[in-house]
Length: 266
Image (cartoon, rainbow, N blue to C red):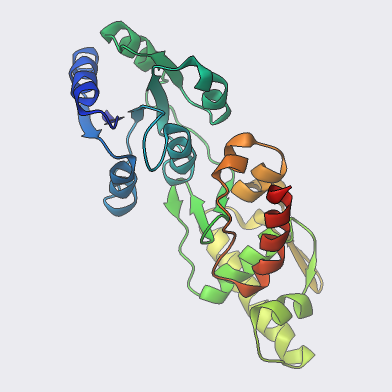
């Protein structure tokens, strides 16, 4: 078992490592006094912790924001908050925390939390996780989905932005390409992208995400777990995670970004 322990106060961090080590003597325990270092080890080194014990009040990125990041980077990781404040309890469970321990940490607390985690359970991921905040990314089972063409990825972003509404080839072409083209060429370009996207999704068994009907295409919204959709649904963890950036790579996304700006400004 790989366990991450995160706390910006070094004495508490060292104490937590010792206590968790007593509770789980066979575990590999890695400590961080900066949550960004933990995120970097997940994204750059591919480490996927089984459990993260994290403080909540930390500089830079707090524990609640960290939990949201972990949801996209490592869906199977369980987060247990270790804090001196009861006031975060409701928000903690909104981000699907495994547990909530009040400081000071004890061996018994850790044993109880680890015992509540199903051992080596097989979790079926039946949804793509799509990140719209900041740069657009797509994840499958915690790993970035690789696209052979940038335009294929951009078309999926466009379909996600349309929230499941059907799109015509001319609508897609008009947004994805700056140069004007006749209807025949636009249709062929979009058909090529649809075919490429279907092949990409078929490789992970998710081809049903796409809906095709003659000259129209859409996505099945219910098969996508998306930060943007979750925010629209009123999930406060995702409302708080939005920092004013939406699909920053695509100029056509500025319309939605503007709507979100005014929505959050009111």
